[in-house]
Amino acid sequence: MRSLETICHEIYREALRQGMQPQVRELLILAHAEVVERLLDEEAPVFADLEQRVRKPIRLQSEALYSIEQFDVVLA
Image (tube, rainbow, N blue to C red; front, side, top):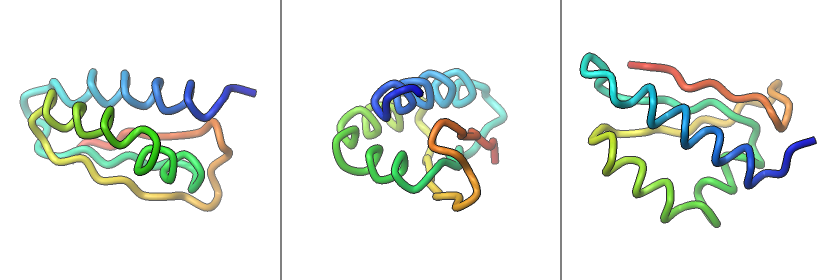
């Protein structure tokens, strides 16, 4: 099983890749509650940097049915 830190870094890379698309107005990250909590706490500075880099708002939503390693980056 991958660590929470590793999962957060994978989310960061995927959100950065998706967020650079010009037609995207906003990103929604769906993930397990523990991952969302980590993104909002320990990874908050990295998450803030991500929003600045993609220049789009990023929302987080916890998904009760997701495993700890599962996440989706949804384009809006």
